Length: 208
Image (cartoon, rainbow, N blue to C red; front, side, top):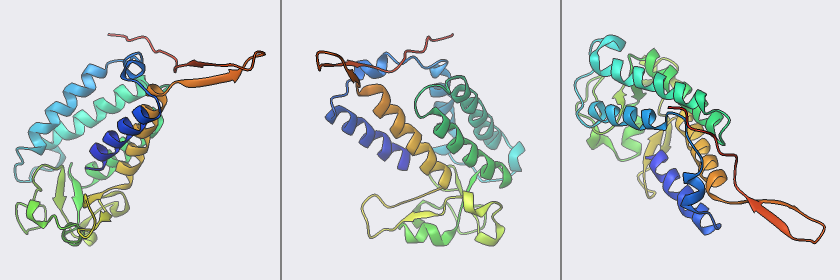
């Protein structure tokens, strides 16, 4: 949820600042098609949740963990682009806590209830999956690397209630930086005539 909201706001504000989609299109993302494909494959696990079993070696968690690793590789190949270092750190933090807890992102029942999202849980037992997420229910004392799990709660009393991780926040900051930097023209220092030139970020050639 936080990534969707951040992306939407980043696009809207970049356009309000005079940004254009042509600026975004001119920024070539190496192997960007692979990242899109991997996120699409993750949807099979997210939107068709199966019971959490088999640890990190189950087909579902192998797909989640393996796709995250490959997305990290794509980010590494594009690390010079604006925001990519933050995106990579956010993905790595999320992957670390997921692997430590069997391949899924842990969330406590208390955090889920505070956000008013208890209806997403497919059961009350520890390890139950959540609909349309990569999360599983785990008590705090059962969660390894708890501080990296979904612990930041936007309560149900506020609009767009949600629960997200530190890694999600870092990832969202990277996405924000990417869209603001690639869509909005950069102003060059004023020349002798007092006029400032405009330009866009460096274009990275696509390597397919």
